[in-house]
Image 1 (spheres, rainbow, N blue to C red):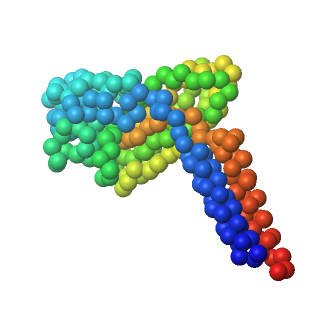
Image 2: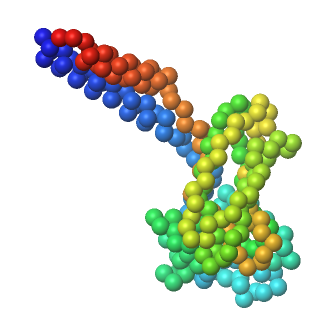
Length: 246
């Protein structure tokens, strides 16, 4: 009889483990990326002239202009410093020769392509279309020019008078840092603009962004919560059974 009870409890604990694993899987599941070209690969292969600068280049220095594209699909690029501005892409997905990769940031492992914004006051933005009273999760990787001292990046998510986020932080010049931010929409401010920024006053340093995603914040499904609760209950029953006198 004792052996039969132990066999039954072993099966129950196995079911409990399945329930817990299912819960973890549901919690970590994400929807599709709601941002356009958040991985910056849409036209990355066309950036094949050193050092990845966009063709806009300097207004008064045409030697900077090159055969690279003048746009990054999905992103509105804005600059406001001394009449000169540029941006670009680096990383394994670009068409740059090996010695041109990562010219404007630290080593970017995993073949990730990143967008760099240079110089001060440069930014890239995109208008979102969101659902009311819904929680979203924004993720991205950020760094700065590998040889720079401490400089800052900025992020804003704003719709008219509603500010979901507006802040800055110091960028890492040795590696890309991962940033996660969650926010819940109001009933009416559903078309906010997300803006990635180089907020520095220095004109010699780039801020780099990679792997930008916006998704519904992960939540456990009701059936998964039930499975997880059942799993915890069965584990408790097993412990109680072992403590009972034979």
